[in-house]
Image (cartoon, rainbow, N blue to C red; front, top):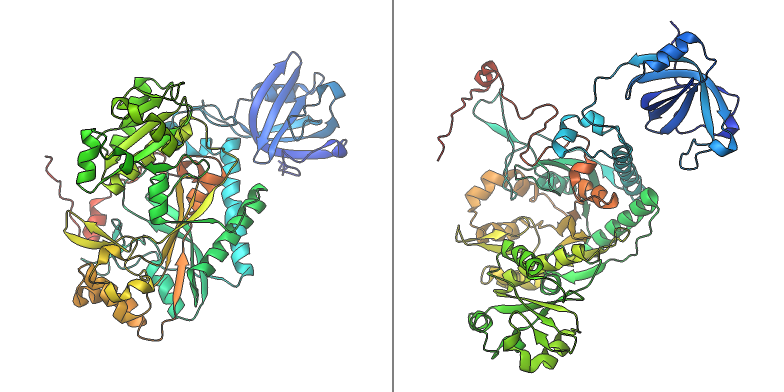
Length: 592
């Protein structure tokens, strides 16, 4: 039987093709029987074309059409014809034509669908992931996967034009501490030894710089054994970049140009550069986050000076203990109920606050409700200092500086979403700079690298590195957009002696450092150039561009929050013979 090979897609035909004989291949999107005339909406990834089986069509053709069901995969041979003017569908790209079928051939049938294939599936996430191959047929998912493809293509194009080489790094590597748990892979040939899947290509891209390739990139697959959430998966992809002989401003210029190019080429959206710059302290103090949502202002404000001597014991005791009181003016929220304020308080408690104090600005300009009795006589002073007006809701968190900022920042973010202040058509980028290089781990009673151990300290802190690690700022930077961390990077250490000083601060002896990172430290002894880089998250970037809030919406085959792929049921058990080859034994852990 002659193959009905596609000669046109379901999204390309127009009135200019009227009279042409064509063959279409695709899926039955919808089927309608209007008496003697039958209409088939035929879909492929390019669009939908209306196929018509006329009343005077051959009996066998009619019988075939009558047997069609949604998602049958079919081939259609027919003739393009213009629709009558009153039947033109302006909502469809192919709405001015239809194809009069001469032959329909069923290529494969379809079982009863677990959910309808439509513009966007409304099925539960678990069902969508189990039948991901059906979910991916929806126009919404098809557009997002195309957007991801476009971003990858334009990234390669942009970086190629600027002299970057795309170089692949290994997937089976040595286990090195990088902040999250490694996925370990047992070796059959070296029994009792393990590879790790890379959390990032960090060490290898630095060695590429030592190798003399001064501009490197790859779309790198990275693996971290950590709890999944909306913007995080066990495996993700990042646009990994490294450059030699650069300062952070050079990195910024490349990345800003890349973002502008991607948004313009993929979305037709102009992005203003250079991006805003905020220090870590500024971001935390004003927005309560190191990845602030900047599509609206509503900044956090210091309230300590007004809280002191107010007689409100909670505020005064926190100030006495060296803490701070942060305030937030929720414009126009003076009509919030106690229940709504309670929900805001829960958001603050989630991030460590003991509670959320509040009061309202009355229409007369006075203060009422909550803790207002402690400030009623100073209402004008309070509202003037905070820039509050009648109808506003004033919210407060008193705690140590970081906790107070983070907790009230979470309230600010929630309010921004509730009040519709986050314009989905707006993309607000910013660089966050001057991060602390070290963080104190209370549980382990030691300093840890806030980013990673290969970040260059800012030059002004080199002399006091060991004496006051908590004050040291790193030459590292994050790119944020719409409340998400989009990229993280730094200028790297290339001096072995300085690298060992960092290891000493975080408790790595020279012997331990050699055991974990010996190959990198050895490479640094052979003329390592100054270098730095960054790694924008591809999944998060496409998620933001697509207007989604979960990266699962832009990954073809994601895992759920338990790290399970419902479609192929992984992770799964393996045969005992496979374990025996690897010298492994499964030991059940006792519960409790």
